[in-house]
Image (cartoon, rainbow, N blue to C red; front, side, top):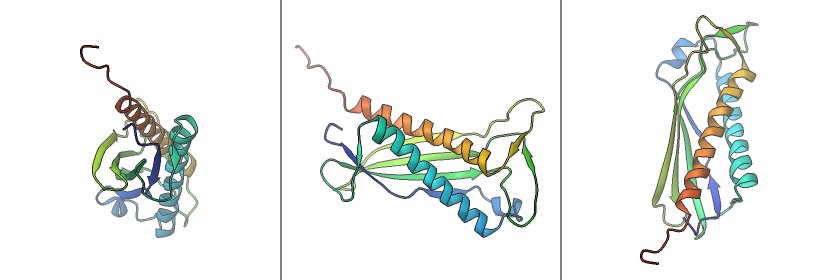
Length: 170
């Protein structure tokens, strides 16, 4: 990991849990696209903040010997109370969105898998009999927290992987 100083970040892929659309028929395709675009933007902002500004890495435009390719995937996403753009509603939810965030790290030149970081967010309840507002802002905030946690785990893993080991017998 010593040689890696830069990243190419592929766009975040997003897949909702099975039958999410059936449970949320009031949510339009336009709103789902808006959510997906927003979540991709938030992921890139968190990545840039933690690994570029704080971690000293840079972004690359093309594969090279010092470049890691990151392919992030948000799967099993369950936003319990998405907004809809057809009727005016106020939603409350007993829990956070649940999701799995996975990122594969590959050598950008060879495509060889170098590592994988996975965070599973079960969407825990807020508290006994507690409901909180659920809207675009709160849903985005909850995802931002998970993205930040994931990127910090990645930074820590890279830090550990790139430290030198003491020579045996030295």
